[in-house]
Image 1 (cartoon, one colour):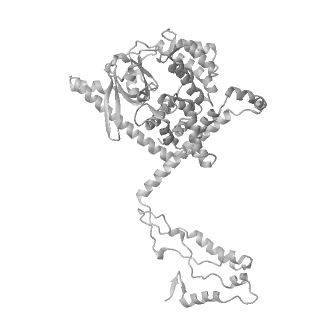
Image 2 (cartoon, rainbow, N blue to C red):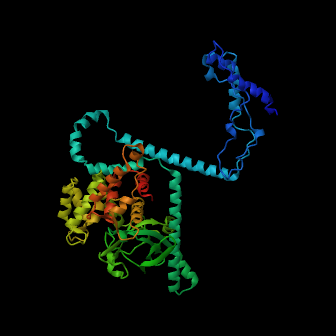
Image 3 (tube, one colour):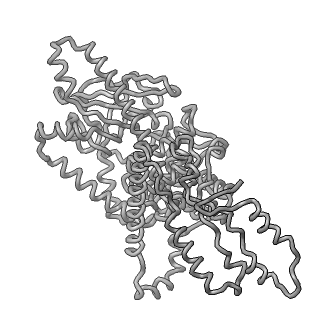
Length: 559
């Protein structure tokens, strides 16, 4: 039986003769090199055709290619086996077959990919381009910031002489260095595809929540308003929907999901609480009943809420005594302060064009107040750049110790003493200007949470939303505090850059995090929401980019 491959015939007799020659012993005077030249590899052994190999995917329709369509090449004599014994006439023969091999690696008659795989390829290509673009932009911003703060050659000598002084002023302790290790999570490459999937899921869940709350609001008010259907629809359709949270150090209250509505026709508002039990059970209940309300503090105290008062970052204040159905933990405080975290910007812009609002003196005064606080915050953040975690967590514990009455209020001398204790330099003029704004009622006492937010600042609502998500994942029983044991179990340091590079172990990174977190706790075996928030508030000061901060939270907590 003869075997014919690509026009070359080979019989079993020729194969036997070719291989039988190898059984003969080497003749006297022959070397292995000369024997290899006279007895090259058999020409009938085909070369493996890599072009016919594809991924073993069950969905592929072209994983099998018939043998007759594949191009088979004969192996030329191996130059490496003969070394210096290769004759000049063999070199063109080898180059010729190598050129043919390069041309015929990919079979010419492969079937065209289906539309399904074309769509997958286009999606993958788009995601990779977008991820690479964002990664390059972030690297460019970091490079610019490094160049901006790079010392000039003229100042290098002064910097060297001032190193001892900097060590005293910065006062970087072991806890500061351990806290800075958490910022290294931002050094990991930005995974655009994974982040996009998580963001899409979060958007879908948020839209589902808003829709269920809106349906419940419409159902409640349509049942109560007994007017013509056209008038009722017009009254309820002109509204602005917004998300808000309670400003509180109580974990149960701070993590409540609240959705509000401001109605234009009568300048009224209502707020509902969205509750989720498990994956499928949800409940929507009124939190603030529908009515007209006024500001309870600040320069607008006594003025009724208007459309211009609703924007991201704005505070809504209510008297706790006016709402009997509020939880007891909220009734303990005289004021209920809500912070707007998100708003339907499209509806708000459309309604603003219809109602023209003029800028008054109060608006200008509030703008000046923000400028005063912004100047103070910039000065203090430079001092807290690398030691923000230690200072803010310790300051929270210090204020709680001074608060003997447990009402959250301290006097002017207490705040001045706190600035000295934590070595925060603030001029007398800046302190008096901030105190004049904060002590609006003139009673000489100010909430220490409000004072700290005013002079140091706080995270934006985008960052703070991820802090709440991380805490809510840990506090699955919704008690407002999390045992240290549970935090130790949930914290994952596998993707920390120092663990990946081998410079540190997972246990070392985890212990460095727990050591700094325990310093913020008033109890040794559990962490409250306020203490958890203080930790990341201090860490946020040294992180410029929002996405870097989100990565610092996403990676170890898996949110």
